[in-house]
Amino acid sequence: MVRHFLDIHRLEAAELRAILDDAHARKAARKGWPQGRPDADAPGKERVLAMVFEKNSTRTRFSFDAAIRQLGGASIIATASDMQLGRGEPVEDTARVLSRMVDAVMIRANNHEDVERFARVSTVPVVNGLTDRSHPCQILADLQTIEEHIGPIAGKTIAWVGDGNNVCHSFMHAAPKFGFHLNVACPAEYHPDLRDLEKGGASVSLTSDPREAVRGADVVVTDTWVSMGDQDYEARLAAFEAYGVDEALMALAAPDAVFLHCLPAHRGEEVTDAVIDGPRSLVWDEAENRIHAQKAVLAWCFGG
Ligand code: CP
Ligand code: NVA
Image (cartoon, rainbow, N blue to C red; front, side):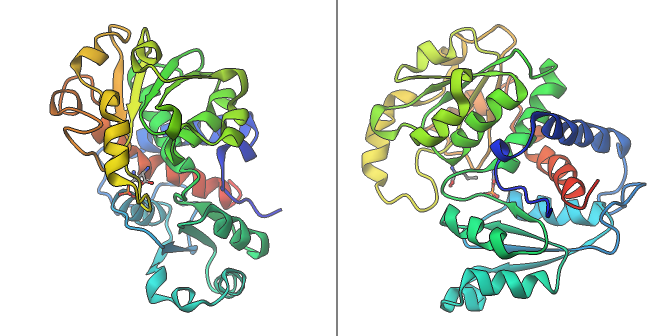
């Protein structure tokens, strides 16, 4: 069985916990090392990771490249528009060809279904680096960050405030797997996909009131109101006006609550400067942890 990492709900809870534990261990083991030095066990030695981007990226691109190097391997990065994929070559044919040339493929795609199609014929592991539907790698990094600062994720309450988008979906997938509760606050017209909400089951509560979602929460998370590919910019800004995370909203959370944002942030929209630059914000650790969490994902894909 090829180990694809397409969505959090597709893995067993124990497998996910082992990946997160490995992310913590790999980070601790290389404290103070130069970024290019491979980990002692180098589970990606002699492996090549291909990365295909249909959308922009800073964190995902640099963190996967750093990750495969730290695992002892190498990368090939391409923008889909520069590939024959951009001229209509079928996703399946691209997958068959790349499977003969590399040991794993990370894809950031416009349509989630294209990643599923790629994985169905790929003979090497495929990792979802964000689609319109989900962003599973982000959530592992977020959970690692939370555990570093406020302890085990099981039993915690996370409040998601804003758009019921791809990142929100992956948080919903993770809630029952890692045993945390997720309060989602979003305007009715921008609620999460009900199929993803269902995967969260009793671990997820949905409201349109940000104050209700945040009250007593251990973690407050938000994301852009306008994701890559969204067209209705003006309508979104109007709909989300009451969903910005500011100090008054943070004051309703638990006294030691922390703030996360996957970035890029739009200061003055979904979050104020005072919150994202304030003492409870963990956004820079969160960005760094993309490397550590994805190393654990890739090591798992390679059979570790
Ligand atoms: N958070 C995240 O995935 O960032 P990029 O879009 O910069 O990769
Ligand atoms: N929801 C955002 C996340 C960016 C990392 C988007 O899809 O654009």
